[in-house]
Length: 60
Image (cartoon, rainbow, N blue to C red; front, side, top):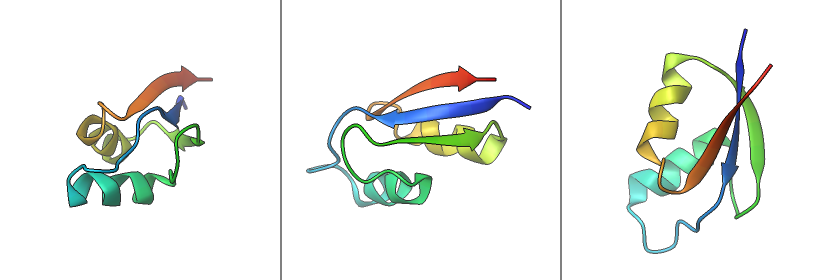
């Protein structure tokens, strides 16, 4: 199954509360943090919510 590597590239300071909470639930806390998650619809939706704050790449 394909995995997604999500890296936080921008700060959540000054952003909406739900965006900060979404980053926290993805496991991201500061700029430069990366996590690898399974490519599932739930995670795709969370990444879409904070797409302006993260970079995403597919990992095999």
